[in-house]
Image (cartoon, rainbow, N blue to C red; front, side):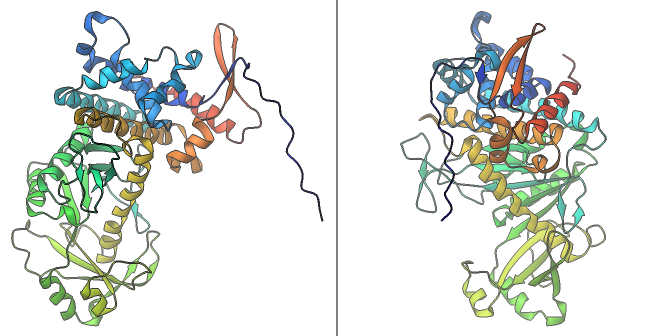
Length: 468
């Protein structure tokens, strides 16, 4: 039997000097400064700094945002930054951060959203400097024109009593936030914290979250840029779709692709389709999807109250193990899913492309999963407004990670999820040395991603800064 090699013996002491952890998180803090996020936060929160004393509230908000992007879960995790003053400077104490969050009301929250929109405009201009801009969304092997916004809700469990936490439709207890993400870069445009018993298909909430998301986009995209809104069947409320059509009438390039429940009329229409009407569906790479077909039901289902020119398309496929099937699906032996779109026949390609484009909405589940690891999977306070501010901080942290990928990274890291970025870049240890009147972070020469991190800092230093 071959002997198994033993690990080298080590002796652990707590007397090290000049060594810092989470050194890569400094990248996030500097990016917040480079995009103007810190300055914008300072401007809108200046009234909360009485007589100009104490910590700058904008800096506190940025530090909380960096902490969440770095994987922190509670306000006490600010200690990771605070205890490394040589790298992160003066960081507020936990009570100071609590007091700031407790002072945020609805008006201040609206100003924080405005500050994030200003930083987003700067980040997008910086991305355009190299001629590429923010990454475009793709579907069926094609690049989708313009911007794609995905709206979806999620459940966040609470294990203690919190203001407006309530029983959820799945039998749990907590909150039911509604969120909107920009499809490909994974930027978090908007989110609203709601009680756990909030309706999934509430049109008023969808309108509010969408309007918040559109306000996050730079003004240049409000007219002329195609903007596709994707939701599941919760977004098929007629009031919400009429709001989208009103936005288009007012000059925005709004289109929609939203799920729809399989009603009795839809079931009758599906059964009436001849087999020759069904066409093979596509996978996201543009290849044929085995065992899946699509067909158009426009004209076979009476869509009363929906915007003019609304089309209805159905997909059928062999159900995968564990799929939730209706009685209709069990009777047919296939799973059916239906969606509505106002993309015209002449402007959107085949129904196969429209269907694979709509199926791309599933990426929002990944964005929500990563978002729960970046702050909003756990709310810290008993007070609703503090938790609403925490959600806004989490959205800003998601944006910081997205801008890091877009502006500073290449290859696999440019598409990496937050956990991978933390493991490879943000949580790296380094030696802190002084020389030539400057501080140096010296990353281990054996760290596999040392060059990627060093290059990211170099690109950050070269980014054009916003004019004060």
